[in-house]
Image (cartoon, rainbow, N blue to C red):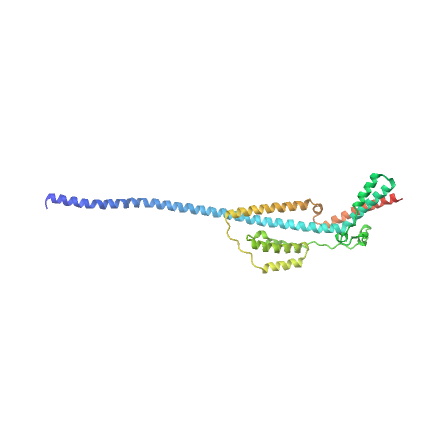
Length: 312
C-alpha cells in the first residue's frame, strides 16, 4: 500500500468516525440535562406534598374548632332551656300562690277609692275610683288562670285561708329532679340537631328533641328514661364525612349566629320580672315566694285597716 493509499484510507476512517462522535455528543448532553429535570420534578413533588400536609393540618385545626364550637353551643342551649323551664315553672307557682293576693289588693284599692269618692264627692276622686274598679278581677276565665284559687265569686277557701295565715294546701310543684336534669343533658348532647349535617337527620333529631324538651319541662323522669332508651335503640348517628374548609367556615358562621340568637333569648328571660326573681334566689325560689307572700299579706292588712277607717 502506497503512502497516498494509506492517507486516503486513514481519511475514510476519520470521516466514518466523525458522525459517530456527533451522535454521541447529544446523548452526552442529554445525560447531563436529565439529572437537572429530574431534580426539578422531585422538588416540585416535595413542594406539593408540603402544601398538601399544611392544608391537611389547617383543615384539622378548623375541624377541631367546629367541634368545640358545636359542643359549646349545645352546653349553652342546655343552660338556656333549663333556665326557661325554671322561669316557666316559677311563673306558674307565682300566679298560683300570689295571684289571689294581687287580686285582693286590687279589690281593696278599688273599694278604698270608691269610699273616698263617696265621702268627698270630688270629680277627680270619682275618676280615680272608676280607674281602680276597672283594674279589678275577676274576669272570664279567671278560674283557669289561677287554678281554683279564685273564681267568679271572689276568693276561694284556699286563698282566704292563705290571706288569714291558716294552713293551706300548697300548689303542686313541678321542677325537674337532679336525675331528670342529668338525663336531659345527656340526651341533648347526643341527639341535638346541631350535630347533624344532613337535613333529614337534622329533622329527625329536631322532632326527637321536641319530645325531650316537653318531658323535661314536665319534670317527667320516667318519660325521659324511655326517650333515652329509644335513642340508644335507634339508628346510630351517621359518621361525619370529611368537610372542605369552606364548609367548615360556613358551619362556624352558622354556629355563631345560633349562639347570638340563644344569647338574645337568655337575655330576655333574665330581664323578665320572673327571671329577675329567680336570680335573686336561684337555689331556693320557694323561699322567695314565701317572702313575697308575707309582704303582700302585710299590704292586704294595711289596706283592710284603711278601708275599715273609711267605713266608720
